[in-house]
Image 1: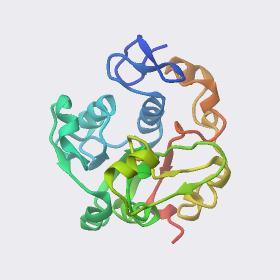
Image 2 (image 1 turned 90 degrees about the vertical axis):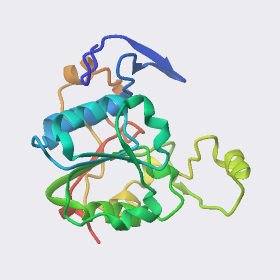
Image 3 (image 1 turned 135 degrees about the vertical axis):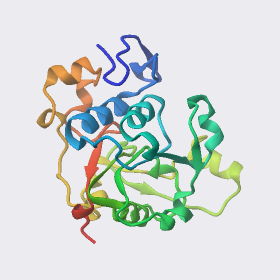
Image 4 (image 1 turned 120 degrees about the vertical axis):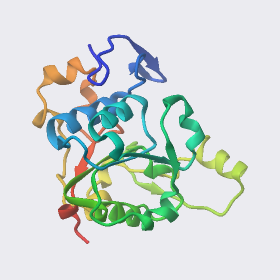
Length: 232
């Protein structure tokens, strides 16, 4: 096994996920799938305009190497990323998404972000897609847990939200039975998920992508959509 982002060969366990995280660049399974799709499918050109939400360490370096000064990293809590040594701008998706210029970005990346926002995630996705250039791509993943879709926005104290939604405030989960009725109503996308249509098994094994993520929707599933895929 070798991390396809940094080349590291040592991995450490995560809760219920043995050898999931690269010890060098801290990549997770979904991060490594994202890197495969960026390198082999999206293939952004040098100097591409890239917008990266909640920037992961290894993926951030990969995108900075491609985009150079056109790389923009944003998050609602920039101090969390001081260890990356990059400028992460304050950005609140629920309010600032409407400030994004239309047709600007060649690549927008956000992994496991939509579950945390306290607003209409569909509108956020639509507005992000409208910010893509003509041939640009948006690459993202979401938690997919069980079969059912759940979504809740509540008027409560921070302590009450933590008790109800956990320390990381997961306000929604995208159940695998309802991908077509949620994300699939926003974008024209495949009704199933099969990584082996895009990458040979030996490539997935080398990048340490466990087989249970290959053929079904999971939290490691990476979606790639373009502005022309909007159905609304």
